[in-house]
Each structure stands twice: as structure tokens, then as C-alpha cells.
Image (cartoon, rainbow, N blue to C red; front, side, top):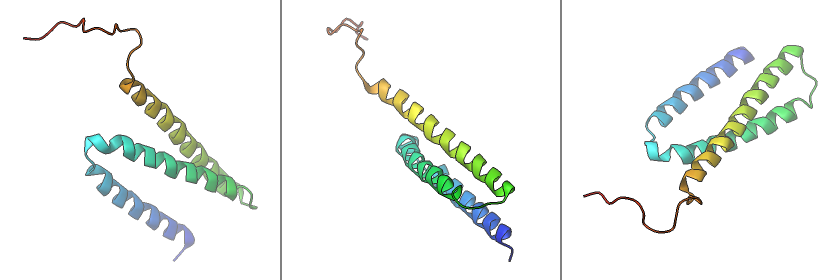
Length: 105
């Protein structure tokens, strides 16, 4: 079997298993799951950088550059979203300390 066919088969299998697993994750667990995918993307970035140390064909360098850009985008976006979500849990500085909110009856 051709090396490209093996890589495509592994990609298809990983996609199917990943989709099946993530589709069953409850909504409350999406944030921790996103943090884990950030870690996996960081490993992808490191792997792509190590790959560029080798002598490669131009098309291999192009695919590596696309993988590097996609993984870096995922890492940066994941950190931005995580930071934004963490801000939701911080107490607001501009609100008064007292209980000035109307009481529901």
C-alpha cells in the first residue's frame, strides 16, 4: 500500500473516531476538552517545526506550513477563548459590594 494511502486511511479513521467521541461529550465538558486540544495542537506545532529541519520536497514543506498555520491558529484562538471564558468567572470591579439588585418575588 502506498504511503499516502496509509496516511489518508489513518486520517479518515482518526476523524471518524474523534467525531464519534466529541459528539458524545456533554456541553459542560467542552471547555476542558478545548484545553486538551490546545495541548495537542501545541505538540503539532512542535512536530511541524522539527519536520522543517529535514530536507523535504516543496510540496511536503507546503503541507507542513499549512499544518503549522492551522495548529498555531487553533492554539492562539483556544487561549483567547479560554481567557475570555475565565473573565466571566471573575467578580466585576465596577459593581457595588452591597446587594443593590432588585429582588424577584
